[in-house]
Image (cartoon, rainbow, N blue to C red):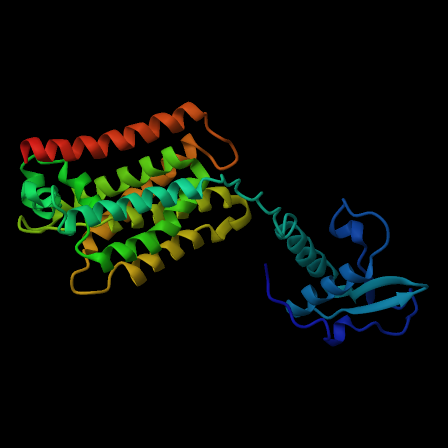
Length: 327
């Protein structure tokens, strides 16, 4: 698209009818610009074409005769005027593009909120002084944190268990409020089972990659690695869904996701920037994969959602059992 002056410019104001045979000026016929056009030139197109020519520095004038509009240009500029108008029509033939249909959303927010609440309950069990729980003398943070040295030594389950632990109540609340918004959106797009599976895999991959890049004494906990993976997945899915509408502006959803990563994922002395970054990177790949497996315009089979949900629960429970038995 090109920028044009206001339609209040002189070229857009109709002049008194001139002699059709006036030498030095030629009438632009609509069919000469685009052979798909039929009938006489209407007012809207006449004004628009006048703006196009004026923006390109070509003299022109609008005339109205017997209720019909004419766009006239000097003889010497006719060829150039026709070329500019043909190029404009070709560039804007499919503009504005047809909007993409809205993404169909599932009504499963209650399940998502219940699972997030379960994460909060688990935090309380690990932190509060509850008889019968702390009587076992379990140091949950020590047992399940993403210890870079331990992960590199083979304790892969820590990349999973660390996602279920939080340093304190404020840390948990931030992840539930901010992360819950994005996780709920993803679950409404792809289903609860598939959504949580993607969230868990993104967080696990992010923790594993982060452990490989950090010093051996690096330790971290929290769901935020998976949250930023979810942000990246939503950005990729939005880009794919609106790719025809966005055209050359397709990076916009990804740029917005990067802005969120910079705004929410890089502040504070205890923030694990590496974990957030690698979770985001994992989410980019998983988001692209999810658009192939479960595109927004097609609903997936129920059995795949059930299988994904059960596999996600099994991975979390299995990781903690392994931590108790081996860790």
